[in-house]
Every structure is written in structure tokens, then in C-alpha cells.
Length: 184
Image (cartoon, rainbow, N blue to C red):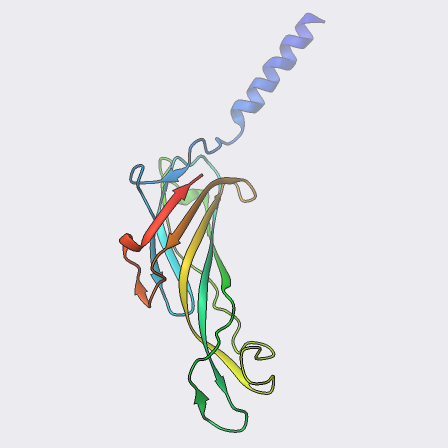
């Protein structure tokens, strides 16, 4: 009976050692103050960076960005657009990038650009216009924050990077001085 337990323990050890290596301390490459790069594309946000400390297996990077949209209202039946008045409530936009394990070299891989989807426009029901028969178009988003979630394997979160953008973004590359991030 004792030999059976020893064989079972040995078999379990072999199975565990044959399993793919899991990510142990995934982080942004570049040291303690490493941060991703962001660009405001007008209606979407782009993020790029490099990951380190990865194990074996596919990676999924998700970008969730929050921002304040600017909209215009159009009077039905005319081509006249009024200046922005009340703007829609803040929006959260997401995008993902799948990275196959073949792209991971020595626990490192770049990511990005991960680009969020654009907000729905025209806005259904035109809630910020004089009435619902008008057309409300979102013309820009000023981004105020972003969360990058890294999963390895997909479904298992190994890193979350939460960033604030202050002042809110304008179109183009976002200055590193305007970005502050924490990782967990």
C-alpha cells in the first residue's frame, strides 16, 4: 500500500511539472515607474507597452477607457448643426488584443496598439438635443482614465494597470506628464 502512495505522489509531481508555466510576477517592462503609452485618436484611445514576467500561454490584453464626449445636435430636415450644448454623460469604451504564446520571448512581449471601440453615434434618442427627432453625433472624446487588464491564460487576470489622465486628453499622443498609473 505504501508503494501505491509513493507512485501516486510521483505521478502527481510529473503532471504538475509538465503543466505550462504560469505567470508569476507580470509587470510592465521598464522598472518600477514603467507606464504604457497612450494616444487619443479622437473617438478612441490607443495604448501600447511591453510586458515582462510572463509564463507560457496565450495572453489577452484589454483596454477600458473612460472619457467625456463632445456632441453636436442636428435639426432634422436641414444640414445645420448647432454648437455643442449639453454633452452626453461620460463613456467607457473597450478594446482587446490577443497575443499568442509564440510571441512571448523569455517572458517578454510588446502589446499594442490596443485600440478601444468608438462610442455609438448617432446617440439613440438624442437625449442631449432639443427633442428625440434631432440627431446627436459624438464628435470627440476627452479621455480621463484607462484600465489595462492582462490575462494569462485568458480568463486569469495576472496584472491590472489603472491610469488617470489629467488634464483630459486632446487628440494626439498623450504626454507622459499627464498620465499617472498604479499596478496590481
